[in-house]
Length: 356
Image 1 (spheres, rainbow, N blue to C red):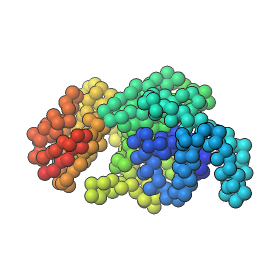
Image 2: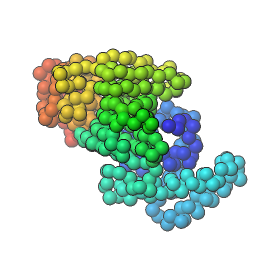
Image 3: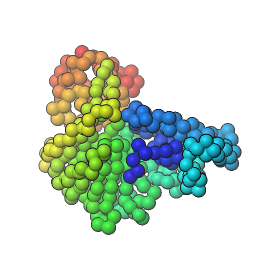
């Protein structure tokens, strides 16, 4: 996987999630790139230029050949100014690909299609909204169950030259064994190398932790920016990355680039009963909460019920709950919480305001 910290303008242009961010059509991608820009201020100028070019390429006020001519003029000017290295043929291949992808994305979202991007795309993109799950069968037979508010991007060479995917959010993977083509999952915090196994990955932007749980098989996790350090995970083990995000006025702030690397904890997963693992209960359409604070389950509740929760009292965030929800709606869940702790709530459309 290419390190995005080394991206130049054309690299950003052909990145599928960056295009969705520029288009503003996918909230998860918008959130991811807003957080990325905050944590990579050194790339602000390059990203701004890539976004400007995206607008030129995706604008529907000019025919495609006009857009290409515009871009060609831009590249020639930059070349004369010695801003862009002389890699003209290579760059034009990437820019041409970017135009095709952007046009494809525009057509897809105009027709409200949430499934795959057309075959002209460099990647296959799957996404889910709040309260939605999606089952995906990959070309190699591997099965992925995608949880709410998640994005899975499949490499253009999947099952040909490699078996690589990118994940933002949460997914359960049941990977088909192929010793000649290891399966790889790339995330913002770590990469996972697999041969054939079942595991769950949870990594949502802005949340304090990310985690991986192994059910069977063997996986090797490599932390980003750790110079090759890795963790080998065995069945029933769970790795938690503490991202050290800080909370202020109810809003989550991402760590500055100077912050030290996150701490890592390795534990056993939590079994609710003989057939249910708490960290993966969502795959059985169950929301399991076990001695967790209101603040800790806030994200799960928001994704499960497709709502936004706002706390008006810091004390309420510390209330701890143990519960199981299957068919209950959000109001029934809140009333169940009220049986354990005293608090008030108001529901305004999709927004829930909780106070003491």
